[in-house]
Image (tube, rainbow, N blue to C red; front, side):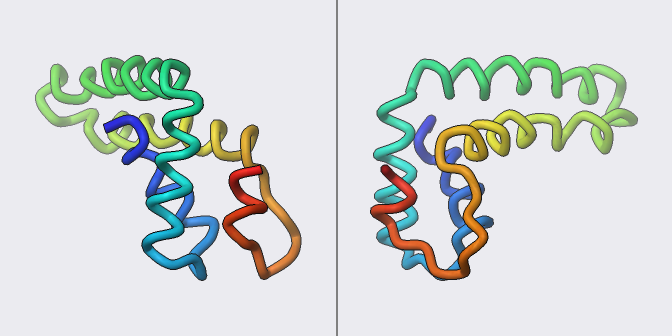
Length: 93
């Protein structure tokens, strides 16, 4: 499940890649940094459960908290390029 969490940020910032390239990039990156990603997914997920404890009132505030660490992980590992064309080798390297 850890590499599958990276499909969303890779697709969001590289919409021109094919499905095969997106899944391949997410598994390569996810398997390389598995333990770090596991921590970045579990800890915010536990914090996001506060919205459930508060009888669903805080769901709107805490639900999207889990996506913030994945965004920063993508930004720090792959980064953003100013160019429109990005190949899979540039993403993974």
